[in-house]
Length: 577
Picture 1 (cartoon, rainbow, N blue to C red):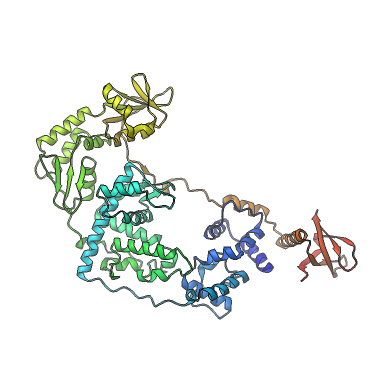
Picture 2: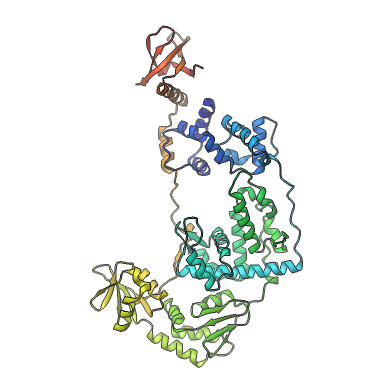
């Protein structure tokens, strides 16, 4: 055990900072671990509980290979590359002795985890009927994700302690027709996060810039972005060397020691079915085969099975718009900024209201731009009632103005209509803003953008103005792409600096000093080999009593006298059994 600790400490010290950070992260080491040097690190990494947690991350093949290496049963069939990344083996690929002990114990307790699974075979091709059903699922899932992103652009999705979406947000999305079943939401969000469309601060999910661009693309391209992102995010044990992934049916047996894996594998399999990579009967549509093999997915094959998209709607005198088929995504997205969708299917219905048009005006539309868009979109012209509603709503828009006071830096809410301002002041949905009367206006310490968005979401005719009094367009709340942000600080950077700072270039003396300090702490009896001035070596058996100033103090067990030995003359130290 002592030799392994020493060897592992030396091995860790030889890694560069990036490698060391990856090892600490893979082993789940806290950035605040109270380590003083690499020997502390090695000692902690060789603890049985720490090794058990690391072995959970090995696949069945890696466990079998590592067990073979521990048994010295010849070269393993599958090199356990993850074992080195987890610091479970030395330079020669042989596991440390504590790892070997853990493997022996696990093989006795869980022999099934060390038995090779069934041969992994490619799934059978889906039938034409199954392929059409898979395409229908893709169409529905793409639409559901689009609805989720649109909702999250207005109000971020709240995450609860478990990481799932809150029940309130789930219910709101179901009521809005975005989802047929609230249970689907976590899988849809998981796929979106894997593709970089949603990003989380830990407390909520917000739309990334990539998600905003995704909404403007066609349905086949939307699908391609999600499934390639999903493939890239799969655990390494599910990936193949050529960039593809193992058949979905092989996923459940991949991590036999991970108690959470069954649940996670089931979630990944559901996502694969949702996005048309597999049928519920475990067969594979033709468009998914190349994706599994590591190449680009066959979007043209999928597109051939999807409903044809349209670019025209029927505008009705009852202030509704009827799309007789799936509307092209970029057109549907803009239409939904102006109208509330009442039903979603291959034929969808949208309703124009003063509130929905106000929301569009708040986001930068004008009466002229709305008329131009709807006239070009309509197969039936622009009905007179809708034209009147557009003009009257535009005339009323901006009755409430939100600005930041230059002197106090507080947000001011003003209106030429005192009755409208009174309605805002007593609106229970706006109580969280803390609005208080300030002369003929309302004021709050909440930021201008937040106040303006809250009033817009509450369907008030609000505009946000700058210091010059000119309107400022309210943009959707989209988080910048991670690649455009400053790189996140390495969480283990401070710990690595401590380890580097304490590392002595003379590892031999550092190790001797550690052994001596541990012996002094326990007042252990040790054999100390000392190099004498004439070059000979002599062994003293001492009860270690103190260490300081580079000198070891101890009581000689043979002569019962106190001896002081300089560390510079000590060759080796070993415990007396």
